[in-house]
Every structure is written in structure tokens, then in C-alpha cells.
Length: 262
Length: 284
Ligand SMILES: Nc1ncnc2c1ncn2[C@@H]1O[C@H](COP(=O)(O)OP(=O)(O)O)[C@@H](O)[C@H]1O
Ligand SMILES: [Mg+2]
Image: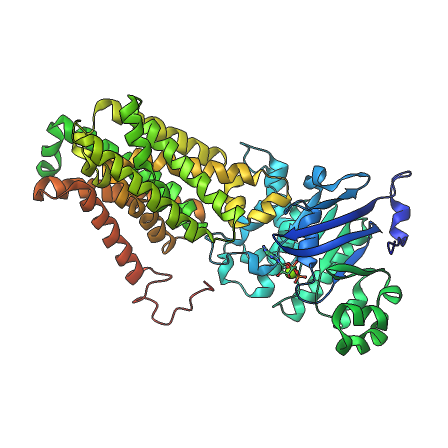
């Protein structure tokens, strides 16, 4: 098996006897006749910033969705701390690809951030004072508090992405999944995203980020998962960014990136 | 002026039909707001056209015709979903196929039984609000309470689900249940509206007030409230127009709703075509 576990310094801070891990076993996903993922297995320890890479159509979004049980998988299991991840969804926060959101929806920034508190609030309950406070703090953390009452469609792409980041922060999750958060955003937002990912990871949270771009930001990730329908490689940058792996995933033309980045 | 408003109210049938028109104006706008934001306007149309065969079969069996209509509406939504998930046919095509088939069956059945029975196809197609009975007012009110309670009690969950279904599902919310629940709310609402405007025009009451409000206010609950206000205003003014000018009531209500929409389209402070000639329209 190609799976590989790397330990990070933060793991030492976790309670004894609970080495948190995400373990994916033999995951396969089909869309009708199309096989999108083939027998994916890997284990990563939590408290890391994990990058999921691969060309367009590689099955990156599919992997995240199947892990969270948003689409059915043909075979496979996904465990988080030795229990099925789908039974602990209250511990996860998912930010979909921006193309999946209807940006003309009649909702304000405030409405969207509060969505992060829906599950914690429970049915038939109004948002508590705590929930409102957490929503405001989350907005302040991403620098969007001043835009509270703006309609979501009136923001720039970067601002929209920061609002979704704030929503995920308000969820108080342990596992964060972002699908292509760097698409269509400004440099400032990219910096905000990475600095918050770092903060989350340093407090023991796990952050999984789908990214198809092999720019220099790849050096920000602790752990890489390289996909192209099959799992090509998983591990730290030196392990994953080899010429052979990159050629298998992307074809020959991007291979030289790997030498600088690794 | 006041006399003009009070005069029709001396008749019991006008009191009942105004009451039903107001209730229908409210629930259609509220439920229609979800259909609009989820881009399911066609589904409202599909479910309403699909009521007819259920109604006819219930009539023949001696059951409550509104119950039969409701069941047919739900079955049509289930079949649409089934075709959509089990075949490569797209949802809009599935809707077109199912609702025209149901509609054809309904018209065939009703035409056959109305030869020998006191049942009039036109009343279901175009509404017959002046013939509303006390029991029908009561049933409409019960449906309205059910619909509004559901929307109020589950507001924050339904907002999350309608804005970002995957994100909502990823937090563990039962989005499949919400999906079915929304179908049921739509079916209940169109059944309740059948008597007022008929199955052909109910789409207007579902979508137009919500779309009008969408041009005026930025948040979903505001869209629902303003939409409900428009629905009520249109229902009342449509009924009075119909009383004084001897117009058919359903179409009169729909015409008022549509005029309000075009006014908002032209003059909305944020999106009006005339008030914002260079407005940048958000990504569609
Ligand atoms: N809903 C769907 N129905 C059918 N095929 C799909 C669907 N979603 C994705 N696919 C296919 O599955 C493959 C993987 O898609 P995806 O996970 O979105 O890739 P990525 O996120 O890596 O770009 C692609 O070939 C895509 O065309
Ligand atoms: Mg993708």
C-alpha cells in the first residue's frame, strides 16, 4: 500500500492514547458508467495541512464528497479517530467549490456565517448569544465584519471565499475540507486563508484543501495527496513531488515544477 | 370609497372567497420563495398540473378530492425524481414528461366522469373561488397553519439547505428529508390554491410575488414577508376587481400580481431597469 503516515509536532499536544487519524480504505466511486475514483487508500494523521492535488477531472472533489458521504461510494470506508467519519459530521466543516454556490441567492454575509451555527443550535432553536458572538468573531478573524449586511452576491470572489471561511470557523469543527478555495481570489485572501489554515493546524485541527494549481503555494502543505482517478502518491512533499509521480498525474509538461517545490 | 370596499362583504360568498384568497396569497408566496431560490419554478408547475388525475380518481371512489389531488401531486414529484436519478434524462425534461402525462390523464378522466356527474373541469383548471364552502375555508386554513409552522420552525435549517445543500448535508442535516418535505409543502400549497386560481395559474402565485420581492429586499425571510404582502394585496384587489367589473377572479388576481412584478422590474431601487440603467447584474 502506498499509504504513509507522518507525525507532526502538534500531535504531541493531543490527549494521550488518541492519535487522531483519517483513514480511507479502498474507496471507489462511480458516476453511472464513469469510474471517478479507483480503490483509494491512505492514512494521514490529523493536525496537518493536507493538500489534495491532481489535474482537472482527477476526482479531487469526488474524494472529498465521498469521504463526507455527500455522494455514495461503491466500496470503501472512511474513519476519523477510529469511527466512521459520516457518523461524526458535526465535527466537520465543508466549503464547496464556488461553482456549486448560487451567488444570486437572497442572503447576506451575516446569514451565511450563521449557517455555520445551525447544527450546533439544534432544531426549533433560535441562534444563541454564544452563536452570534462566534459568528461575529469569525467574521472579524477573516476581516469581513464590516460587510455583515451586504448581500452575498455583491462581494468580490475573495470576499465571498473569506465569508465561507468564516462560516467554517463558526462551526467549531475538527476536520475542515475546502474545495478549490484559491480559485478566483486576490492575494490578500490567499494570505488570510493560509494564515488561518496554519492557526487551525497548530491547534490540532486537520485541514484538507483541494487545489489543482501547482504554484509555489504547494510548499505551504505538510502532506500531499496526488490523485488521478487512482491514488498516485501520498506523503510529504519530497515523497510526492517526484518526476515520476508528476508525470503519472499530469503528463510530462509540468514535471519541472516538482524540482523547485520539493 | 369605504362603501366600495364594504359593499361586497355583505355577501357570505365574498367573505369566504376573500379569506381563501388572502390565505392562498400568503402560503403561495412563502413556499414559492423556496422554489424560486432553488430554481424549481417548473416543479411547482409540474406538481399543480399533476393534481387532476388524483382528484378524479378520488371523486369516483367517493374519497375527499383534495386528498386525492395531494397524493397525485406527491406521486408526480416522486416519479420525476426517480426518472432524474435513474436515467440520464435531465430534471426539466423529466418534469415536462411527467406533468403532461398526468395532466392528460386528469383531463381524460374528468371529461369522462363529468358527463354523468356534477363536476366541472373548468373549476379545477381555472378556479372557482366564489363557490368556496365553509369547510373549504377551514381546510385551507389548516393547510396554511401546517405550512407556515413548518417554515417558521425549520427556517434556519431550510435556509442553509436551500442556499448550500451540500454544505448543509456535510454538517449532517437530513437534506433528503428536507427535499421531500419541500415537495410535500408545494403539493399542499397547490392543493389549497386550486379552488382559488386553478391548477394552470397557481404557478403565478407561487413564483411572481417571490420574484417581485427578490428585486426589492436582500434576505430570504424578507423575500417571504414582502412576497406574502404582495400576494395578499393582489388577492384582495383581484377579488374586488372581479366583483365590480365582473372579471374571472383567478385571472384578475394573477394580473395584479404580474403588474406588481413589472413595476418592481422597472423601478426597484437596487435592480430596477429604469432606476439602475447601468446596474451590473450578478452572475446568473
Ligand atoms: N455529477 C456527476 N455526474 C457524472 N460525472 C461526474 C459528476 N461529477 C463529476 N463527474 C466526473 O467525475 C470525474 C471527477 O470529477 P471531479 O471529482 O469533479 O474532479 P476534480 O474535482 O478533480 O476536477 C470527472 O471525470 C467528472 O467529469
Ligand atoms: Mg473539483
